Length: 277
Image (cartoon, rainbow, N blue to C red; front, side):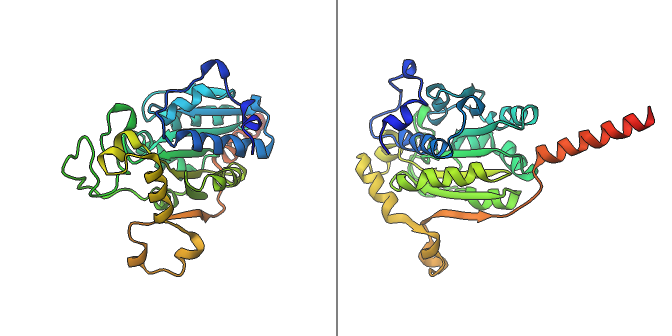
């Protein structure tokens, strides 16, 4: 898809962006916009909510209804928007630290409610905006500004966490597999419930430089070599899958969607109140 196809969704007066050369955020954002374009959504009925971090600056660059909120609080703001206006398409753009650390509790409860939100996490395995501290998604053993001898903590598997918490759609991709991202975004938006799309992205300046992948091409090569499709994963042992990222549509199910159930509750209450009156 040509660049011109997504330029209409960008605020040109907010460009150029602040992202570093080689950053994967632009690829992920482009995938989100191409997904919106495929669905031919009315920009005036799309809301993009972000928290704080490199990826969260995306909200300032897109020409939708946008909210750039507090660190880790994108989902609560998005929840309020969706409850007030269930007719709107609400997309949360967030980073691995923003979503999985300070925002982790909000994440699991939004998934539990099955609120109709599409959450896109730009997973670059680090706090890129604040000098490369490790995050809950930094791989064990990786070097970070706050783990100079290697990260001792195991990383969350956000897909499994979302599934266990109650999400109804979960997918994963990488910036190397850029052509896959729009299709996953389309499926996530079309899902009536809580959807998570995780995209493995590169931060060559902090994560890459500290972990011997200082060139953006090295990070893309690493993504390619360590990504396994859902179909391939079905024929691999746990030992073979260790350290790999399974990409594609990981999980889908049906469950009552929160705003619809909330609407039914209001309707029942109104009817009961009118009968009493």
